[in-house]
Length: 409
Image 1: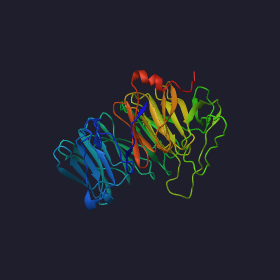
Image 2: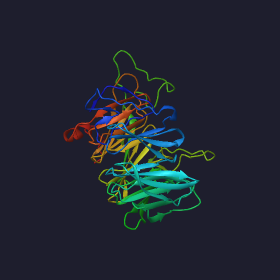
Image 3: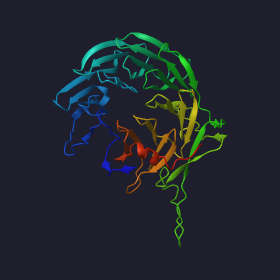
Image 4: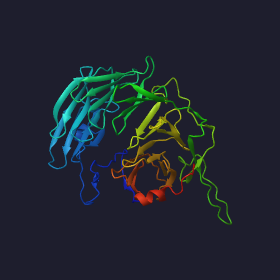
């Protein structure tokens, strides 16, 4: 692996453009740059359009979305965006945009054509408080789900017809996360009850559900535990570790993975029952690009990542970190998962094993988030005020990167 120099960053706002040519600046033409100023309207969110030629900015208080063209420098406006968990989604082919709206105390969805930003469909949703929308990768179905007080997920066609509604239970906190498989055959729904339910694309019924037990007893499940590497002893003096109060998450201490022997008890977090948004339930999930694996995080077990085999519908592996998992994301080209925990390491898992990689540089570069380049050969690693690029070698280098893996054969 190779790492770039460190660049300045603010508010973790950094992302590759869909065509892979830009990271706000051009990767091919370093002298090219663009700066957008929303003025007194303020800015709370920004994203690329799929064609890589437009920037969509959401203004303060969600008054509007401004569409800026990088080619013609023209500006378009979209009114009534709703402030919700996930209120904007593009089809994979980049033809359509779906937008969650709130008008007259009622939820709506507008579908726009991205070529000219004209309205194609507009319909109301059968939700109390629309929390998010997400297109299936094939662009044929739009999933919309209600806020946590009501368990309801609705499936709509491109023309706004309601295809199906799914509800797993009532009178308890409901949906917390949603993810489509890249094949569009499965929809994973993470819930506050700590389970992931998998729906199929034919009947939109549940085919299985995955729980997150805190004790692993099955010897077929590989449990990787992160452990600190012992610092080398220096002849003539003894190196003492920094005080615990002065050290961040793992500070700059290097780490490695060890394969634990079952049974393994995972570290759990007891939620505060008297506070809003309790740290329970499945807070994050994502399918691998081949739809063969599903990665999940249960917020009551914050240091663990669970990896499920979708073909066999069983738990395959668990990665237990020393610090709480902040972000994970699949390589868009192969079944390779990148994980960060707010420390100075980035972690990679594949069916061959997993590895912990130290991010070089002066000071303590704490990786708070990450995102893959669409080619799968590089990662953007984001800290609070800076970011850098991690370049992974191609086919031959994959074996090299995992040459230090914890062996579980």
